Image (cartoon, rainbow, N blue to C red):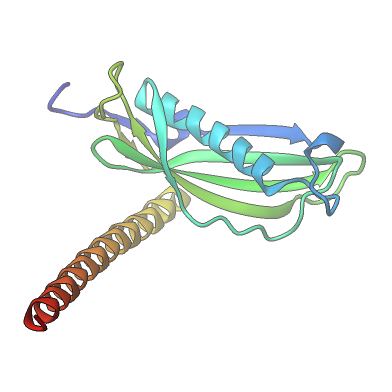
Length: 187
C-alpha cells in the first residue's frame, strides 16, 4: 500500500445505465419491487466504486432511500452514478434514479436518489487506499459538501448507538449487582 494517494476527476468514473422494467419484477400492487431498484442501484454504484478505486470495492452502507414515485412495468429506469466523496479507503457514490415510459416521448420523472458507501478491498479483503475524488463543477462541489454532511451524520449516529449500548450495559450490570446484593442480604 502506498503512502500517497493519486487523484481522479469525478467525471472519469460516472456511469449511466438504463433498464426496461418487466412483469416479473412487480410486487403485489403491480409496481416494480423497491428491491429490484435497490439491486440495480447497488450494481451501478459498485461499478463506479470499482472503476474509481481501480479494483474491487464492497458495499459498506446505503443511506436512506426514499421512493418519490412508483416505477411501473414498461418504464425505462435510468440510473446515473458518480463518486461524490472519498476517504482513505472508502467512497460515497451517489445515484439518481429517473424513469420514463418505453412507448412514449415524455419527461423523465425523478424516482429516487441513493447514497452508498463502498470500501475498496485488496485480494485478501482488507481495505486499501482509493484515489481522491476531484470535483470539477459547481454541481460536483455541492455533491461533495452534502456527502461530507451525510458522513458526519453517519459517524455521529454510530457514536450515539455505541454510547447507548455502553450505557445499557452499565445499567444492566448495576441492576444485576443490586439484585445480587438484595438476594445476599435476605438470608
